[in-house]
Length: 141
Image (tube, rainbow, N blue to C red; front, top):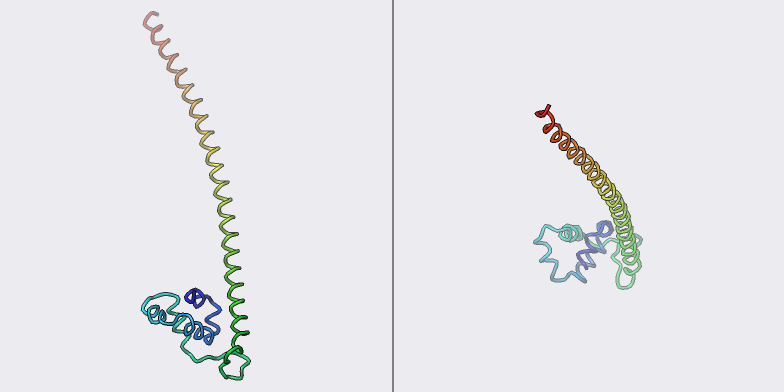
C-alpha cells in the first residue's frame, strides 16, 4: 500500500508526507524497493529531502499537526485516482461499444456475402446444366 501511495502524483508534491509514509509504513521494505527500477523507488528517492509542509513556518509538524495536511493530500490523491479510474472506465466502455457495433456489422456483412455466394453458386449450377444440355444437343444437330 505504501508503494501505491508513493507512486501517485500527489506524493511528489509533498516530499515530507512521502518521507513520513516511508518511515512509518515502508519500514524495512524501503531498502528492498530501492533495489528495483520501480515507481516506488523514484518516490522514495524524492522523499529524502527533509520534511517541509506549507503553513508550518519551515518547521516540521509534529504529532497530530501533520495529520490535517497529510489527510488533505491523501484525499486529493484519492480523488485523482478515482478520476483516473472513472476516465478509464468510460474509455473502456466506449471502446467496448464501438467493438460490439463493428462485430455486428461484420456479422451482417458475412451473412450478406454468404447470401451473394449462394446466389452465384446457383447461377453457376444453372449455367452448367445449360452447358450440359447444349453439349448433348449440338452433336445431334
